[in-house]
Image 1: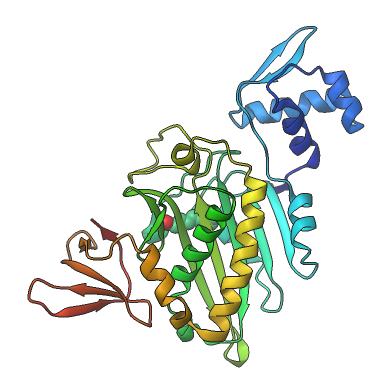
Image 2: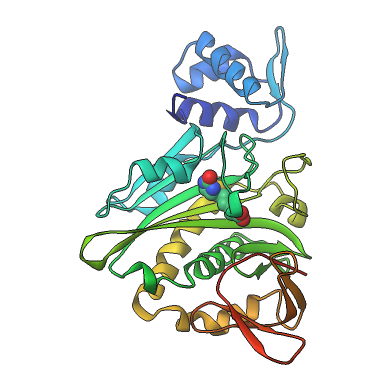
Length: 320
Ligand code: BTN
């Protein structure tokens, strides 16, 4: 598969069309300094990705629904992180996989894609990644710490993402579900998949993969979990470029704090955001059942078993 950076022409064409009016190929081309046939090719590409474009002779093109693509240049400008490689891809198998092939223990990298053909979820699950709707992002973050000191990283990543979502104005009661889900009324809208690698001198690299259902409205047979999206929750179309900026910004801050102080810095915050606290939960489809009592300083779930014994669970899936 050829991996392509998302072209800025595609980003700008969708921006022009996002007023949902007709725009003809000549005028779009003139605004972008490209030919009418280059505009036509870009429109064909959008259609191949499943975007509905109406095309009427003498009127031009019209999008059926607003579509703002992720603007790499805006992200770079807003974050001003010249040492970090930021790339937005049109199409990729999985941002985590691609980042793994390009790992560099001395450089931070952020890869984002408009669609993934082989998006990976936890426990070997598939992550549904339709074009132009959601966020599929992987952040390569290097720690001057051993892998064994990174317990609870996925919880911190979840908290940073929730803070970013609130920062862009979503006020609904969104929460976290141990160990890595973002939920609204028991429906999942976000997950993270962290892949760790030991480096020399006791350092480590983390590939932090984040998937957020942002503007997705349609059901898909690929999704087996009870799901929602930020657009369903807020009833607003969300500009994913703004959300990416907020996520990276918050991740930088949260990961810095985590590096300095560890998970203990976040225990109170977790309590505020914990959707499972005092709830009856099942771990790994019933391997354990009990009442969730929050997390400990290692990020383990504290489960009160029917016998009254508190069991500390270090990994697994939870359902209520
Ligand atoms: C889960 O809840 O199961 C974790 C989902 C993680 C999905 C993201 S999308 C970006 C990155 N690339 C992948 O292939 N997976 C993660």
